[in-house]
Image (cartoon, rainbow, N blue to C red; front, side):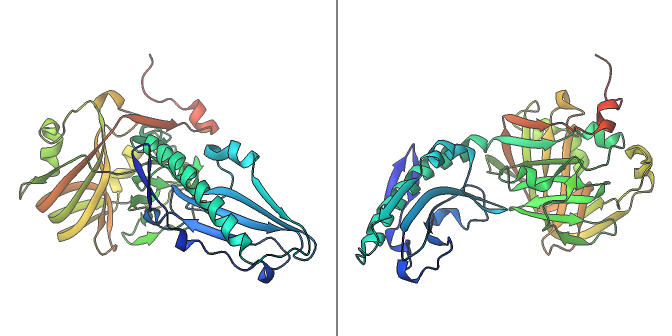
Amino acid sequence: MGFGCSGALVAADVSRLIIPDAEKVGADSRPLLRKELPQRGNLNQPGVVAAICERRGSVVTDRRYRCGVALGNEDGIQPIHPEFHDMQKHLWRHRREPGKIQPGMNTRKLTSLALSMILLAGCATQSHVNSRRDVVTQISTYDALAAGLYDGVAPLKSVSGRGDFGLGTLDRWNGEVVLLDGKYHLVTGDGTVQPITDLNVTTPFLAVTWFHEDTHQPLADGTTFDLLKQKPETFLPGVNLVYAVKIEGVFRHVKTRSMPAQSKSYKVMSELVKTQPTFEFQDVTGTMVGFWTPPSMKGIGLAGWHLHFLTKDGQGGGHVLEFTTKDVMLKLNEKLEVDWRLSNLSDYRNAVLGTKP
């Protein structure tokens, strides 16, 4: 069953609504109903909508049901969400008098209610997700990182729901972070790759967004990173905009770096990279994720191309220094807004960054 929702299709399948028999539900509060929009995947993904009904009170003395709308994200279900704050204030309640049990009544009423709530929530969520699709969310600045401000500013979970694609590093400039298809990977200082599952870890610099391809073009065999740097106008629709960049396929050669965690007192980046660990790959398949930042935004991001690499087998990668293509596709996603989150650490407040106005 499909319903139009501001131009978006919201799927609804009543047969998937599963409501346990009320008589078999324990005295504590437990979920009675959970419905996911099929096209949204599971509840550990941003933008997933669920209608949840819970039984409150004793089975024998009181039959009360509370239904609300929940949004899923990387941390799981969050019943209270700003998009539905007003709705949560007025949760629907259904009370049944003790002793008047009518089998089937719960299922019919809760199914109808939940379906209505899912459709309404789906409309609001679709609008909310669409409004964030062209936004890059960034923690701190590249200038701050270059100046040796490597202490973590915010946890990864602070950008949950803000993207499935991006790059950065972890506290103390520990490795190179690759966010690809919603999964975080850390290329460590020795070149090995680890999944990042604890989103409480902090980052001094991170940029994330939702990647949805606008344009793509094959890169000719033998195209080098230097060529992209020298002639960006050949590969970009406009050099004064921000683009999320995905370059994937087979590379003849890739050279990367990844820094091990640093210890205070921190050296500035220009000193550390003189002895940076580097890694080289030959005839390798993988994906580069990153951004094009226009020269006018130098210091906020790394001006020009900023790319991190992850091999297809997930065993290697890092910050891209060089590459030569073999059979590669360049994909771009234009971004019209940057949500820029500054550090509140004292070191940042007092640092000398950029030039005087």
